[in-house]
Image (cartoon, rainbow, N blue to C red; front, side):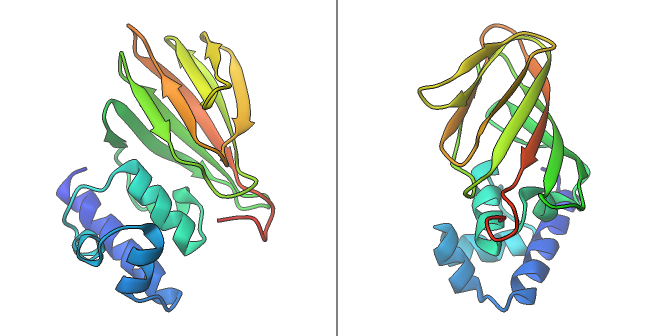
Length: 176
């Protein structure tokens, strides 16, 4: 992530944390990270992983897209890039993303909040995705919907895969 995007994310994160009346220590502990790492992130430093950003969104009880909305560049790590396309304003909350996985990628995603579902439509390449132990192989044009409130994977082989991914959060009360 470039310096401007890191600064934007950090300022937005700090604002969201303060709006909820949480201290650095409270949010860091809840997200399973060091207070110093959270402090650096809020100051626009560091290199947060996608899982770290997810955990922070979960602990702030907001959709991932709400945390990353001010960032216009793709977020990525280890062969995966994700960019928010749009956020719905209705209930349940639905976020839409563009996602790309480079060849020979294995992305292990942490469980999201209860009731969350993902639906992905493969645009190009080949992809294996879904909950651990219950994955599905997709070719272009195929769509898969699965519960994302359990650990899940995205796996490519020799070719890159691109997809449109929607995340539907549980009804209010279950929503992050």
